[in-house]
Amino acid sequence: MVVNMTNNIGFGKRKTLQPAAIQMPSPKTPTYTGPDRRGGARRKMLKGCKIIFNNQSSVFDGVIVSISDEGARIKTANPAFIDDEFLLTTVFGNHEYICNVIWRDAEFVGVEFE
Image 1 (tube, rainbow, N blue to C red):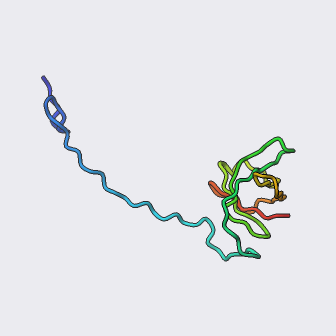
Image 2 (cartoon, helix red, strand yellow):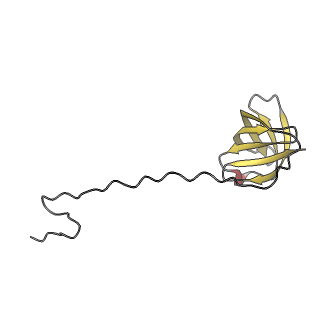
Image 3 (cartoon, rainbow, N blue to C red):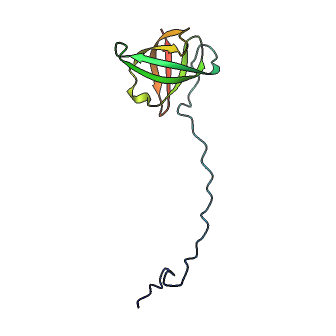
């Protein structure tokens, strides 16, 4: 019978497990660290929205995270597939905005209103 003794595993032997080192997550660095060029202050909110483009044949769900008179920051599943110009409506349909994309992130889109 051949027993592998190099890693302390064999018949009747147990492997000694060492606890994994706990690593604290690094703080998320902001994507844009330059000066704030917004005209007005944004108000924080969490309001559901629909992103409509491609002659109303493409609709994405999103959440308006912050909004101002000039633009908004929207969280959505995949911002890479959103067109550069779209119609933004709130879930209950009481507001509609025509938007131009200013910046994109892995989960957010920054837009300005026309």
